[in-house]
Amino acid sequence: MRLKTLTTTLAVLAVSTLAVTACTPQAAKDGDAGAAPAAMDTVKVGLISGGAHPYFQPWAPAGAEAKTEFKLGEVTFNETAEWDQTKQNDVINSMVANGFNAFGVFGVSPTDINSTFSNLAKHGVATAALGSCPAGETNDADFCLSTDTEEAAYKAAKAAIDAMGGKGILAHLTGVNVDSNTQRRIAGVKKAVAETSGAVTLLPDVTDIDTDLTTAQKAVADLLASKGSQINGIVSTAYNPAVAAATAVKESKLPIKLVAIDDDATIVSAIEDGSVSATVVQNPAGQAFVGSYALAKLASKSCTMATKGQIVDSGSFIVTKDNVKTYDAERTAKSAELQKDFDSKYLNCK
Image 1 (tube, helix red, strand yellow):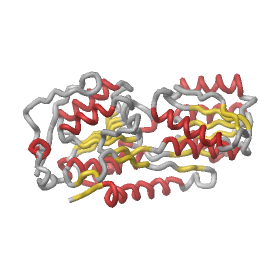
Image 2 (image 1 turned 60 degrees about the horizontal axis):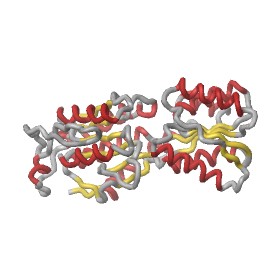
Image 3 (image 1 turned 30 degrees about the vertical axis):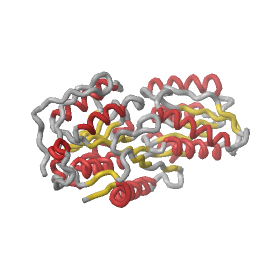
């Protein structure tokens, strides 16, 4: 059956008292689990980042591709939350009132975003945590499709340690300290260092420097000015610090081995010229494309989750000079594999 808009305004609590005007599927209202699925063109997907950040830029074209490929009603990317959970809730609220019935969200507050997911679910709206899972052990979204950030950081730190020759002093640059993803990254780096049995010394983590490039540049400049001559390697597990470090290390001519994250043009160019040893790329386009596909299956009532709250690793990939020209093919193949996994493992479909 088709989705239709309720005329009743539903006031529900979310983070900081979120008022949701819900466009609720009739099947969800009546509890009619046996109703025929709606067409995919009735699905309107909102891809909501926590705010403006280079990491999310692939979400827009990937969402547009998903709309065309799967014949969805709409896929819209919105980054106007300005890293404020209340504003993000307001964005979602407004889009629900305008008929959006599926959301992929990078929650501003990992500790609070579950409240938003829970309230949307009560009114038949399909939800996914994209790019970041909620903090703790519970995911109240239908699924989370995100980088296994601890594993990605572990890979990056291992690559940095290898580039250092297995010994020396390593610095770690990363993002917001209270973010659960940052804590997972810190754990991944520490795991890699612990495996050296003392051969590598890890300096105190440099956190909260991914707000913008200027903040990252200052932090990297301060680090090199105070400890540059002692450092053998740097691993960055956040985007802006990676870009800042790639430029600063090259300009300093210090013999520091740098392993970065993501594939900003500055990073790719530095890998090609040898001034950056490696980077670990993530899969934001796959998150948006496959996430939109799975959300559409759920919102149309074609499928349900085999396991509610399923956490799925969207993939991370080491890029070096050897594969810098070809790594994107590996990432594309991973996205195709993820879509098949949703069909065969994560979704129960009619």
